[in-house]
Length: 569
Image 1 (cartoon, one colour):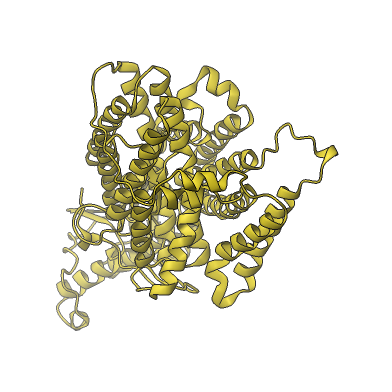
Image 2 (cartoon, helix red, strand yellow; image 1 turned 135 degrees about the vertical axis):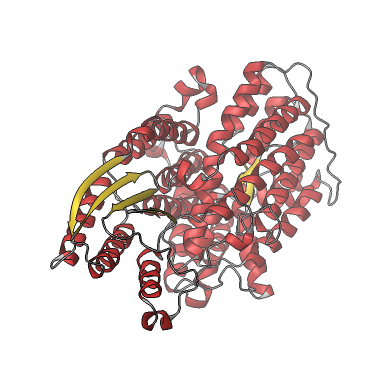
């Protein structure tokens, strides 16, 4: 297991990107794009409001709870943006009070506990999340891209009921009134899309421009909050958040397990967002890069523990903001640093928080719809990165079905399974459990004799193509297997070997090929290959040829008459 940044895969600048990850976006652009993120993040301030109400906090206590939640978001956002040390993926990861753990918080409030005890439970969950990071050697294999896709898809789909609630669609008498707010929502959405498609220089600010147009239409249509002035007047410009020390009295094993249980979908959520951003920031992306993911998971655990220690609500990544950055092709880290500074200002100023809370409902709904579209599309892309064999189809299908079940009948789950009354929690957990349960069944093995004479290229291609189709392996993985068989076969043929025995095994995340051969033992692959070796001794030529055959392998093992290589998938 490695957290070293030196092991990170070298990135390639994606085509069409406006601001790449390592580029410093201009100050004005960074401020505008960060403000756009803040507008989305502010929507989720309703979650700590709900939790504060469940805890029975007064107005001052509720405001303090919201400010602490914002501080937790700042901690996670800053940790993930770090480019040095063992913490943080070094990616843009705007943060929100996470909806993933809201069910556990409400469960604690229903048991008569306060923010201090809930903070203690979150502190325990954060410690568990940190420990789990060290126990997971390859997170990209434990939560493969198709499960990350299920998580991202359900995150986008989960925004749709929130959008409908914002518009108060359920039970509404549409036959007696013109739905001006819904019309404003779709007009704002249309402006966002039009600017993003045709705005060129203004495209990254499509949602912000659409929101401004929507606020103007809301003012003309009488859709502004009626008590906006009083809401602003009762909130001061500046107030220090007061941390709440965790209390461990009154905690039950059931509540501890509820918080620990919520860590699993929370891990899947952060991992899904990290993979989605990693894919968008690397033009040559083929598969998840492990070290940044491990550092990101560790930073997430530390942020959970820190939030619990000060009595705040659990932070998590804003999939909406991640999707927005991907859609806008604005990936610069400077944007997220500016956003962290703005979040800190909000945490210190209740009046500024109130300004974002007062965004008209139709505009909030349009923003949710805009980012939901990109999150759902990104989830579909991640799900289909690899060929879906029967097992992966079942894993993805069960996860999506369970998520949709919660979206269709939320009241039933809230009554009977409150800890799973989240489409993301149940869907991600179902996919993850089925993935683990069927993982021992993944190993597949094929044995065949490879003739090393005429027709070697065709036979190696046919074998690799057939195995890749049967196992659902990536095409580029099987091309590497094919190249290995051809290059090794040519080397063996030059040494007078007529045929070799091949054993290929397909595992989750890797393909291993073992070639047994007769004749003299092969040398080790050249440690420092040089073109001059081709004119050197027979041993030097063989070492160079063997390096060429195994250069794309992740692991190599040799013994007399046998060579084993593993290719990541």
